[in-house]
Amino acid sequence: MEMMVGISVFLYFMGLLSFCLNRKHMLLMLLSLEFIVVSLFLGLYVYLCVYSWEFYFLMVFLTISVCEGALGLSVLVLLMRTYGNDYMESFNLLW
Image (cartoon, rainbow, N blue to C red; front, top):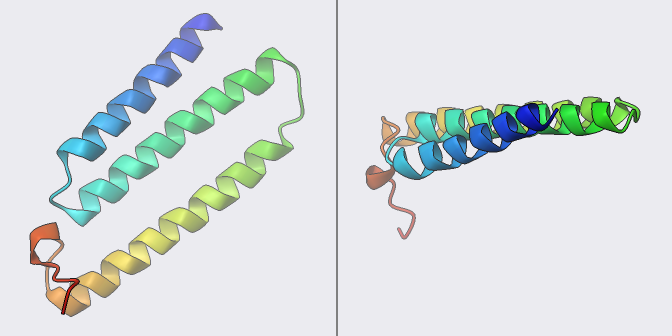
């Protein structure tokens, strides 16, 4: 189980690194956030398996993460319709 926890932590930090390096495109940022959520899901699953607890919280976590993904995609579609691309440099939020 220690190996699975180590893999989950490694995946989490690789997701954070990917998020920091891909800050120019909105779609790549959203994909990095989803990767971080999947690594957190893996870590939570391992944690709940080790202590033999209920997996009900995993369903709540997945529901909230799906809502986060849908909200991110709707913001991406809105930005694509407004600005025409997903480059973060072209968004002028100070109008």
